[in-house]
Length: 228
Picture (spheres, one colour):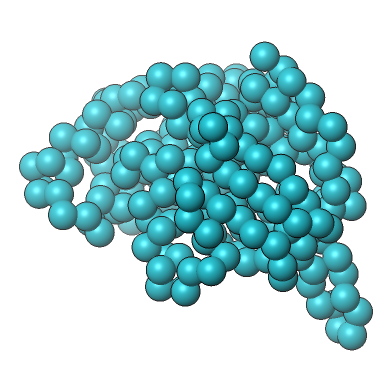
């Protein structure tokens, strides 16, 4: 069953008086429980597409339906509420709050929910345990390695139980060993928690973790490559 349905999606940007096309008449589906890697050269539209699926950016035309909701038609306030409930974000440079502990960083999205303080504490400790950081709850980002910071960011991304995890170059700032740990964790979340994972990467090795790979070139897809 398709979780994400994209039809005739078009996006361009203005550069002075020039209109620069980024995505052109793009149509494809992403199945629920899929782990998809998006690849392509810089400027191919990978991150733009990811941001539109995440509800951060809107297309010029076309439809983008996620779990039955046409997110293109939502107002900004409706879109913000939809993002909070449905999408977990994982960035290349972690985007952690340096003045907050690992626990507090992961807890942040839960402050917008109706959970009690006791329930939040239970959820956060479970999430940090799942990413292997049960012994780092009181540490600040500056006291953690890059790989540990990314694991905190991943715990924060899935703490509200979103349907989709979007990852923009999640291993781009990590050494090979830490990068593999992060890829293994994403695969585990996909496998054990049935999270749909959409990952932008330049790294062919990282892409092999996904179920399938799609290459964007000048705003258009080549044929999907099925990994496993």
